[in-house]
Amino acid sequence: MRVLALASYDSFLNTASLIAPHFEREGCEFEYALVRARANAQITPEQVAGLALGSPVRWITIEDLCGSAEAARYDIILSCLEGLSTRRLVHHLAPLGEKRPLVISVYPGLVLRYPFDGYSMRTASDLVWMNCKSDLLAFQSMCNAFGVDDRGARIFGIAPLLQPIERDAAAEDGPVVFFEQAIIPRYHDERLFLAEQFVLLAKRHPQIDFIVKPRTMGKDATLHRTWHAIEPLMHEAAERQGGWPANLSLSSEKASALLARASHCLTVSSTVATEAIHAGVPTTIIGDFGAHDEYGLSYFFGSGLIRNFSDIVMPSALEPNPDWLALYMANPKETISELVQEAIRMAAEPRQSMAERSLRAEISPELRAYLTARNGATGVLSRSYQSKRRGWLSQLLSKIGVKI
Image (cartoon, rainbow, N blue to C red):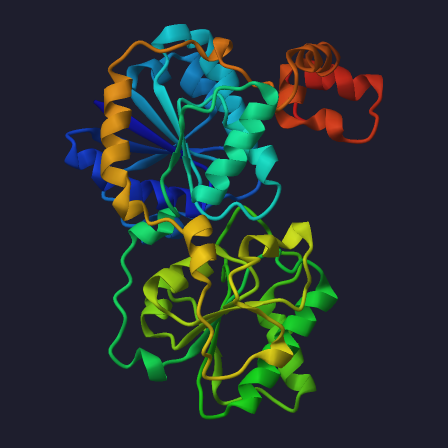
């Protein structure tokens, strides 16, 4: 049985690589392809090489994959894609009818922002592997509201937890590591505040080593592009506070390597927090930036781990709330074998055409037809119609498939 993993960015490809061995153990042939999702860089060759996939990775477009009927030669597509690429995949698989592959949608990390927008784009998938019980309940609630079939939704777990983290024996005395995110927080003054507070925290505890792990360094690319890189802000903050502390450094090490020796994990809201919690690393979620939907802190409501910088105590005695763990944490090592076997069984059975699968939770069929008539299929798939009112030329270009 042939499985094709589609990924669009570094964390998405990493998720595919963590799942791949479990399909291979069942005798499947597993391949990777990177999907072109934007004009600018999505992932560098160095990032791909760093994953040590053991097999070549090619670049494709969804239009070519499905239009050439190459997709029909696969039994399963593991869709590790962001929302808009997922929409294009569903649209372009429709002409293959029942000859299409089984589609599994999986998330590369926590669903921190706009959860229902993402869920609605994935309802046409045969299987939707969810991160946790809370996500599953939300997905089912949405489907029920719109009369959409939710029988393909499963609790898979948080994909990065498939990667084992072996804690160092001396980790209790290890560094405090802050895991930065590209757009959480987003704005310059917020990010400068973050940098200043971390410098001050390091100066308050000169006996402890502090490490900042930027989301990307150098020419690395990722889904979200920061407006204000953390490294120059850290240097600016240190200069304001009288110089760079001797116990503070930046690191490009992998998150798993840092968590193996960390005495404490700090982040605003990040998938890495769940990796740390799962590995037994004391964890604090920084709450200074508030309960804004854009920043995804709501995922950690009820965890008991949210603190402002001014409230952080080292060493920390915080422990996650067991009730929160039951709803928001799930270990894919406990589910993946059964889910892979289920997918293989389903792939051997007849399939419903994508055209027959409901997308009502995203937009109604009537609105889709209306928007398509005005903007063309490309305009609907890219959501270019959500921009400010455009002139006749822009609409014409969208209808004939020219990106604007």
